[in-house]
Every structure is written in C-alpha cells, then in structure tokens.
Image 1 (cartoon, rainbow, N blue to C red):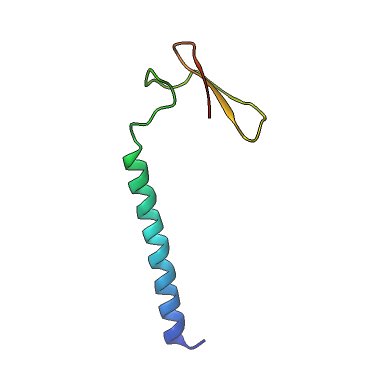
Image 2 (cartoon, one colour):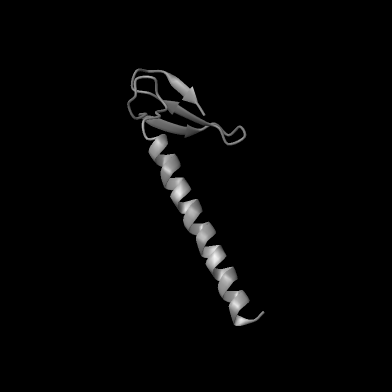
Length: 67
C-alpha cells in the first residue's frame, strides 16, 4: 500500500467515524423527550428480568414497565 492510498483510506475511515458520531448525537437529540414511565419521571428501580435481556422498571406511580 503506497502512502497516497493509505492516506485516502485513513481519511475515509475518519470520515465514517465522524459521520457515525454525528448521527449518534442527532439520534440522541431526537429522542431526548422519550421516557420509560408514562408519568414522564425517572424510574425508581431497575431490575434485570433474566429473560432475553429484558429489564423491569418500577415507576413512581407504582406501574411496572418491561423493556
């Protein structure tokens, strides 16, 4: 691999990483108001259900949510 090809490859790799990072920031910005509980508050407790990686959340209004 000559220096010119290596430079193009590294530039392309850095560009992909920067685009993925920017995409992650954009996705987090779009979902900033999504909440787990219906009352839009933070859950009181988080437990691992043990079934295929599901997590059980106990909300402040007494409801349990599985995600």
